[in-house]
Length: 260
Image 1 (cartoon, rainbow, N blue to C red):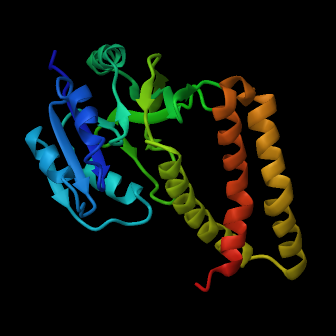
Image 2 (cartoon, rainbow, N blue to C red; image 1 turned 135 degrees about the vertical axis):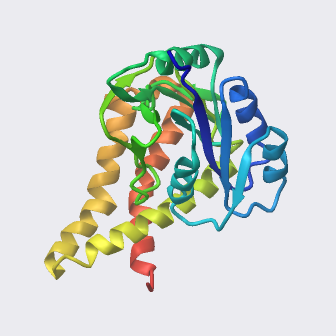
């Protein structure tokens, strides 16, 4: 039986503080590493090349998944594992990945994996933040990204399975970095809201605004902090639920202020 091979693919932009730890976690697992870089101004590309990665430098589109898809399209091995630079593959997950791709022939074309998100000093285990399944492993040619939304999942042609061991995610060094990314994300949401709002009548826009300014943030906070027990994640759980809820009214106000 032919040994199944694995491409690790990534899109990067100014990730010199993250990329080394990420690549260290997969260097023994990957048969090739492919990185599409959005013209980083730091040492991201230099570090990636030290790991033998094939690096292509291009522009940096607001929808980051455009560059992720470029990296996926460049993969040449049997399976594709798509990662972000701020993610880490544990030894337990590494062993499970090896087993998953070695089951050939297999009807399964892709795998969901749980993910732990690190936030201001702890992994969030409540508030709907765990297991936070993400579809990152798929046979080459079977998985693709819609490239329409920052939090979209891959679309896999065929049956998908589930892995047990979590991927570790370290998206923010501190609260300032969280606010920076949160602000960028609300910019993207505001554009989506504007497109939706333009399709509506004057009366519908009034209800639409009330929904985004009042109903949706209240519902989201109660859902994550109370129903999904975000309060069990200490003060970090409160902060996360609060700002997750505030993204909706903030994005709506930004939508009203957008000129195009």
